[in-house]
Image 1 (spheres, rainbow over the protein chains, first blue to last red):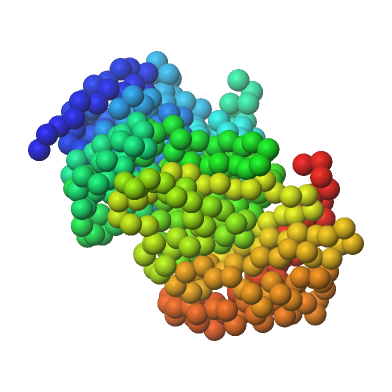
Image 2: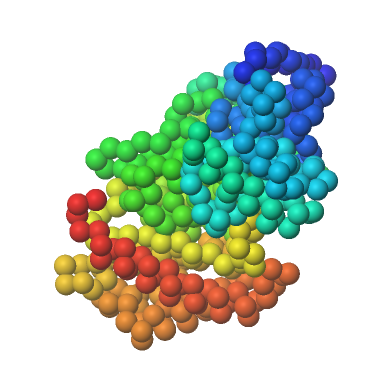
Length: 158
Length: 289
């Protein structure tokens, strides 16, 4: 199989990689770039565990063919923390115990970041609808919603 | 499988004709699950999103044009579009999660051919037209004429939709879209109803369109409801006729999401509600929008 040369900016760094045309962006991130934060849950766009920001839009990276990312700017969960300091969402998830097994967490963090950038002061209902594309089989969602509410307060105060 | 990202409609047309199993795609939100589910993988995948016209959203004095691959999130985010076509905007906003809406498109939602596609009834009530490109040139067809059955469309395999044309919404006219799903979010419609109501100067209904989704092999117009609404004020008696006509127009499947009887009943209830919403909106559109 021929491999295509793909040039991207991932988490602020220019990153080049090779991938077969049929490879998903998710697999390319994990296997070629070595960023294993985004997870494969369903592989069909239902669970959101593979969420990344692609050109500032929250996207299931399992639904993106790797060559589509040529020229794109991508943010994965690895790019959330700033110089070793956790993002408020990450800190609030930790302090609020908003995770158990953790598989869904990178996707929730990315989707929550996208949500708060669009709507810095969401209601609980808006958070629940905004995160409807992310499935969690452990927490029952309440702690995740509360962590996002707390992070939203902190981010508005910053 | 080879990925190709043409930068013009002409280039895309050539690529699509290059192999019998070449296929265009926009967000791949239906395509990837289909490939994963065992459908044959196309030889050539033609990504339409690098063609400016395919990802546009614009208007002039006469019409809006929406690129066939424009992500649906742009329809819900655009305030001018959402105010003018709240029903179509709501339908676009019901297609999957935020993650999906970053990728899903009107062209994909239509050409996937699902009877339950949310945007289709909302497009049909608004008389939306599709500009279709192919090796023999381009043509314009009504969205209502695209889907011919579940997963079946009237476009030839070497044709694709470039953009949609939507005439500007007249004053005292408005649309609405409602759907029923067993969950509160992230599910496929059991019933979808698009409605569009236009009022005459005396407040009676001059234009009425009611289209059902998910209750027949394709979206269906409810002529009996439309005929009853014209000339009325959508009073309770008229809405009872609308509901009965909507239930009657159903030819649904019986599955785990909804039985035939349930779908028929819900179609009637939702048709009444969608007409009422479109009517209220039409009363508020007094020409300054």
